[in-house]
Amino acid sequence: MDRLIEKARNREPEAFTRLMQMHMQTMYKVARSMLRSDEDVADAVQETILTCWEKIGQLKDGRYIKTWMVRVLINKCNDILRARKRFVPEEGMPEPAVFDRHFENVEWNEALRTIGEKYRLVIMLYYVEGFKTSEISQILDISESTVRTRLSRGREKMAGIYKADRERRAL
Image (cartoon, rainbow, N blue to C red; front, side, top):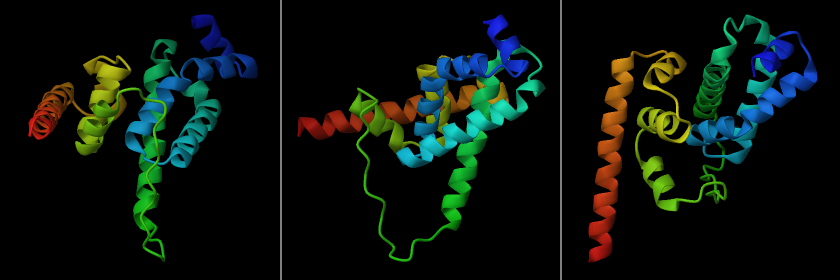
């Protein structure tokens, strides 16, 4: 892995492509947790790859390639979200729902969609992508205690959603 990262830093396209392919699923999941539209997810991932290619030389320690790349991706997703807030469609028509074929657990995804983005993102990074709280802290540029608090509150919100759903089904 270190050799691959070093080759990518030396601008070897094949090494960089392999590196990005290794992390493609992570990028998709993180972008999907923030953005609803497949087109926006594709744009965010594509822009992240381009930015990483342009700035790979700035990566100081190859061990943090995934953390660095996810940080770039989150910034790209936030750019898209900000741009979307400025855009007001003339027709005022809501965007049609997109069926998410890439996640198997529909209940999990429904519960994730109902909690706030700050909780959803931390939960995705921790439980789905396996980042440590210290790594999430670096990625999101927040304190580690804030990460732990958001994880705790996010878990509470998810538990409340599951409990309400069970009660609704019991009726």
